[in-house]
Amino acid sequence: MTMTAEAPATDLVGRAAALVDLLRANAARTEQDRRVAEENIEALVGAGLFRLTVPRRFGGHETSIRTFLEAGAELARGCGSTAWVATLINVSNWVVGLFGEQAQRDVWGENPDARVCGVLAPSATSRAVEGGQVITGRWGFASGSLHSQWAVLGFPIVDGSGTQVDQGTALIPLSDMTIEDTWYVAGMRGTGSNTLVADEVFVPDHRIMSVTQAVGGQYPTEHTGETLYRSALVPVLALVLAAPQVGLAKAGLEVVSGSLAKGRGISYTFYERASEAPSTQLQLAEAAQLVDTAELHLLRAADDIDAWAARGEYMPLLTRARVRMDTGYVARRSREALDVLLSVQGAGSFAEASPLQRIWRDQETASRHAVINPAISTELYGRALLGIDEQVTPLI
Image (cartoon, rainbow, N blue to C red):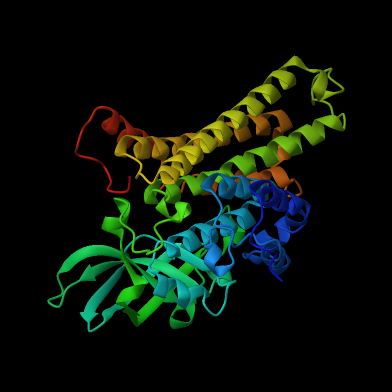
C-alpha cells in the first residue's frame, strides 16, 4: 500500500535513503535482467517514491523540485538504473500535472498509483481528425516504460491539410502501444529504456499539450495555484537528469572509502596501507570536493526553480540557460570525481565483482544524455550571457 501523501521533505529523502541497501543488493540482478528488480519497484511504491510529483488532489506528495532531486540522488547511491527509472517516471508524472484536469483524471482518477514514462523527441507522424490527432511513431530510450501505464510522447501537431502547426506532447496509455526490446548498452542496462511503438493511435485533444507554449510557461492546467506545476519546463526536464549523477558519484566515493578502511595496500610500493599514502589522501579529498561541487550546483539550480515557481513568475531566459549549464556542469564534475576514484582504487576497479565498474559504466552512459550535453549547454549559456537572440536549441 502506498504511504500517505502528506510527508515532509526530510521524510521523503529519508525514505529514499532507507532503500539504498536493498537497491544495492539488487543492483547486479537489475543489470543482468535489463530491468529494475520487481522487489525494488514494490519498495518504491510502498515508500510513495513514485508519487513525488503527483498532485495532492490525487494523493501525491506534490513536493518541491529540490526534494525530488535529493531523493533521486539518494536512490542512485544504491542503484543507478533504479534511480534513473524513478527519476524519469517522476518527471513524466510532473509533466502530466501540467495538463488539464481531464487528462490528469484519465491517468490517476481510477488508479492513483499509475506511473508515466516519457520521450520528448517528436519522432512520429500525425494527422488531424475530429476531436484530436491520430499518431504513428517510434520513441527510443523510453526509460521506465517497463514499469509504467502511460507515456507522454513528442509529436508534430498538424492541421486538416497535414501542415505542421506546432510541436506537441501526447498522453497515451501504454495499452495502445507496443514495446520493442532495443536497449542493449554498456551502462544503465537496468533502465529498460526500450522503444515505444504506436500505430494509428487516436489521442483526444485534452491529452495533447503544446510544447512550444509550455517552453514559455503556458500550461493547460486549471490549477494555477499549485506551485510545483508553475516550475519552468526545460530547467526541470534537464536538471532532474543530473540528480542520479551526483548519487552515483557518492556511491563511488563510498565504495573506495570503504575499501581503504579495510587497509589494503598499493601494489609495487612500500605502502602496506593505501590510506597512509599522501597521494591517496589528496586524491580522495579531490574526489570528495568534486562531488560536493556537483551537488552544490544541483541544489542551487533546484532552489532557483522552486523560488521562481513560488513567486508565480516564469524563470527568465538567462536563468533558464544557466540551469542548462548547471546540468552539464554537474555531469562533468561527477564524472571527474569517479575518474579520480578509479585511479585510487586501481585496475581492480574493473573487476566484474567490483560494484565500482558498474557505477562507472552507469555514470558514463547517463551523463551522455542529449539534454545534459555539457558542450551544448555551455554554448547556449554563453549566447544568453552575450544577449545573442539566435540560439542553438529552443529547449531552454
